[in-house]
Image 1 (cartoon, rainbow, N blue to C red):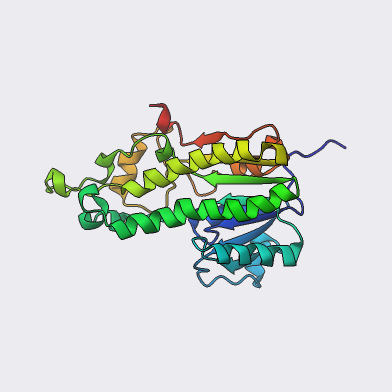
Image 2: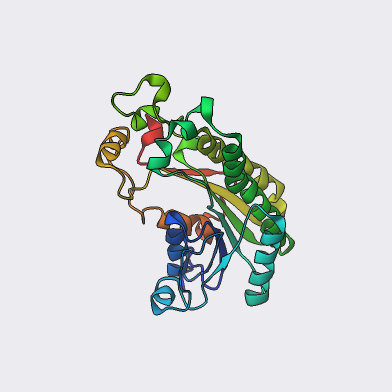
Length: 274
């Protein structure tokens, strides 16, 4: 029988930021390929892992666990729970990030570099970068010990290009009061690419592959004016649908990408090509 290189049957996948917009999509993708998603998040958003809807979407064995990835002891507890329940962990998807909503970005006291709060800088880096480091350190080390595993870091097209701040402009405001994409988003996502290369070479002899994915913007009922502006910057002429990264996640997590490590898979509708 011909091997299905995309098969994830019985592989256990920890997904940080698992109950967020893309986290749920990643979990659904892994479950569709036969994997067992473990959704780790500081907020579980009232999900019911015992419901029929949950089991149909994510599988009988999938579950969610409250985890603060900025705290080493919480990450250790996460790993302990997963090993106790399943006896193994095969995949880590570092997906968690602080990504401010559109209305938050419109607050110049928050978004503009001149006013950006140090506390917000520290919080954003703690979740998006330190959290990915801690999860890789703890969970990746376990996979390296077992000589098998995959890490996928979820970066962004803004790890490759600077934000086009014209997207966020509001009429009638002077230049020094215009809202912008906060600096931490670019810094965190760029840092994840560096983390990917480092870990890929560090664990190359231990059977752990590490890659990144750089998605473009996902349509989620953003203001129409913003969607139109952004779409004009994308060769395909639109934002991504929520499920358009699922196949890439399966590819990166499965044996289909067995000779791929230290690489960043860019899926941005062509935006970074311009």
